[in-house]
Length: 485
Ligand code: NAD
Image (tube, rainbow, N blue to C red; front, side, top):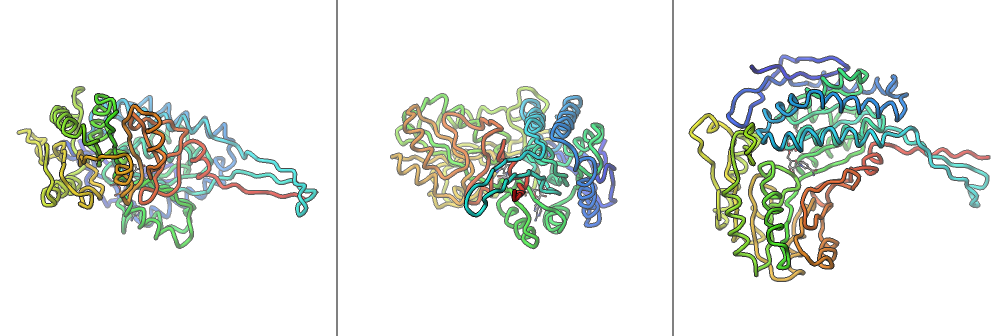
């Protein structure tokens, strides 16, 4: 039974009368009706967030905020299956992934940043230089104020809590706008916030689209102090323009066209397993996925053949089936984009090693957003399919001869988010990793995350870093106080 997916403003759930359909990409069925927050609702959400800064939340200690975050994490744990079901209904991702990655990681995000919640911690400097003789300086960490959290659809709750956790830990208040494709788990989170007794206005949720809609209203709002955004690079540019008028603090985690490099000394089986994961996980809809695979020429044919048989063996099916490894794309709209690239690849002269089309089920899944896992070869590095982010279960595999050549190929990209290197030679691993233009380089692994480490990208892949203290630094404002003795 489709239900109403509501906004959460100043501690109350609100409908708007202006709705759109939330569609399940497995079979095109209706999940719910999403109530769009217009300009007035966004204004009220921002005003509520502003007001909450001068309420009990604004005076709270780090320990109190940590307790609130743990309570919210407890609340998600208590309703774990509902969160899993909401995430699956919106994305079609396999149960095995939502159960072990999306929802558990969302819980860990909140608990991890609860551990970093601080009071108004201070650094003290006794100054005895010529121009500051006889003074003490101390630095107070303050929240930024009202933070807009704009999140994408690929890992909905995981990526929302990744930003929400540190924003709240640092004492900010938040207006969150989840993707229009995946509003379900964020709305459950608002219920959990409410049940956990988070004060009204501290967490607000507004639903709607981006340009000309809720997202833009929020980003252009003059009373929003900072925007933290995960999504496409082009959207990042639009948000930057909207934020320019009153110079908001920005943190952007954007797109990627990530290389994986398989050297001739790699452990073949490990490199193959890792590459299968890095290309096809979440139906290729992870910003960190490898879309460009470079394989040493001595292994090329063998590696492509092995990758082909692994891609063809991937179990594509119903999300609830514990055996399922790959679900659909997030929407028919996104499928049109991915299929457009499959067609473009052929037009650009690619060899389609496997896939390139749509699986047929002969049941209601044929109304969904499925595509085949796809491997391409034979394109020049200048081809659009090698340069542009596709965000589907697809990679292009190219041979290389030397270390210098593959470093140049990997770096010849407008993006710079992540890279994976497969080699048993640790000197080479360090040498190559340090030359790759990316925010994150994995050696003999992929998507191994320690929440303390800096996360973000270079070039079109982002602005700033989040993770551990990097997050706390972004979500806090140091204020120095100098006292003449
Ligand atoms: P998207 O940019 O289309 O949308 C992301 C969010 O921005 C949505 O909530 C959307 O409504 C909102 N939005 C769109 N236009 C807006 C505007 N003009 N003003 C304000 N808000 C606006 O991204 P998506 O399609 O949801 O997600 C996929 C993209 O996200 C891919 O490019 C992927 O690489 C990237 N991504 C990056 C990371 C990372 O950490 N670097 C992580 C996940 C996804």
